[in-house]
Amino acid sequence: MKKTVLITGATSDIGLSIAQKHVYEGNFVVLLGRDEEKLQSVVGLLGEDSCAHYVWDLNALYSLKPLLKDIVSKHGKLTDLICAAGYHKVQPLKLISNEELMLMMQTNVHSHLMLCQLFSNSLYSNKMQNRSVTMISSIAHFVGEPGLVAYSAAKGALISASKSLARELAPRNIRVNTISPGWVETKHTKDVANTLGNAALEKLHSLYPLGLGTPKDVADACYFLSSDASRWITGLDLVIDGGRSV
Image (cartoon, rainbow, N blue to C red; front, side):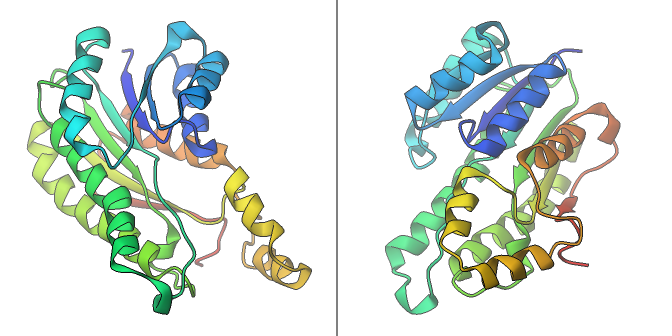
C-alpha cells in the first residue's frame, strides 16, 4: 500500500537520499526544509507527482500545527514520519553559551518531540495503516569526542525519549525507532574533513573497518524501519557505523 511520508531536513544529503529511496519504492513524500530554492531542486530530482514541499524551520514550533493541517488537507493523512533534520556544531565546553545549548536542544530534540506529538494524533496520521517514526541520531551519543558535548547530549536525549515513545505509542500501532550513523560523507562532513590534516584524516579512516558511510546507507536503513519488514521492531536504536563502535 502506498505511503505518505513526511521528511524533515529534506534538502540535506541524507534527507534527499531518504526521499529518493521512498519515491523509488512508490511512496509519496512531503519534504520539509528551510530553503525554498534547495527544496525546488529536490522536487526537480524527485518529480512533482512524487512529492510536495514546504518551507519550515525546526524552531518555528508555533506554526507546526497549521502546517500539518495544510499538508493533510492537500495530500491526505501521513503514514510515516522521518526526522532527518538536525543542528551540528563543534564547540568546546568552555565556549558553550546557554543560548547555543538551548538552540542545540530545541533543534535536535524539542522539534522532533513536538512533531511526534502531532503525528500520533489521528487528525494528522492514518490510524488505519501501520505507522512509524524514525529519527536520525548519531553514534556521538555513546562515542565521546571533544567539542561535541552539547551535540552528544542532544542526540542522547533523542535516544532516551524514543524508548518511552515506543512504549507509549505502541497501543496506537505506531512504531518508534532511531538510527545512529557514524561518519557519513556528506557536503558538510567533507567540508569538515578539508580542515583536517593528513594525519587526522588517516586516523579517521582507520576507525572505520568498512570505510566511511554514504547517505544511501542511512536511507536504506531508514526505509527498512518504516517498511512492513520491520513491523515487529520498535524502540530500537540501529547503529550503522561500518564497525566504528565494535
